[in-house]
Length: 362
Image (cartoon, rainbow, N blue to C red; front, side, top):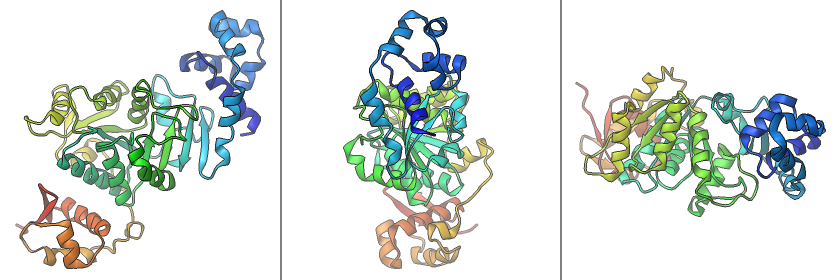
């Protein structure tokens, strides 16, 4: 796309007071943004009325446009518009698709099969472990993991996907040039280099509570389904789940203790019809997903050889990851992937406290 064409897209989306619905009306009526700004005043008024027409033509957003048009000049930085073939086709199915997206990383992931994982910002240790392991399992099956890069379950889901050598997309509620929360800076950098960071908000947009529900509709919309792992009754994750249901996506929830506040949101979803999840296979079967596993070379695991080494080292007594790393001399990230495979194969079981136990074949 030429800089002139991109500038027209940016001028349209950065016009103060002109929301997505009005922008889509104009695009439907005139086609490309250049045609919108070349249309006569009378033609514009006929589509959006006097007030919106005045806002569109009188807004001085030259500085914002000049700043944004430079974004694609950076390494692995892109602007994907509604008219681009790279635009995520799943977002075209939602009621209010964004007109353009600011992207850092690999835009091709936006059109891959996606499963979203969301949940509490203050999860239990077991919730964090569940998010990491489920994300790793889905990544192993060939799904891209999407979330919102918030503290807690979101961050754990991104980490689980990366740990398994999989792909992940982070939708953020600020400008793409900002990192929120700051504690996730290293994670954001890793996602930007290995996966994909996405924002529909203009460059420089600060943190605003109103932006996160809008961000959540994209997390729901891009996915085949949304898995909620721990959520209080007032959690923003329930907004994502509701939007997913409204958009025709599957909604899944992991149950927990009846005494835990972090489980009540998931229990509420299950009562409302969300699918109860105990294993990753529950989700994959519901999605009718045929496994497309990441190759052993891609994740640095040499077939079943590592399994033959680990099982005798484990014995049949519970042991932790650090203890197993000490016994085997293997890196913990490699161990985590191998243990995930063993668990999915039913050869070990995960226990509270991050421990594992070998299961004797029946």
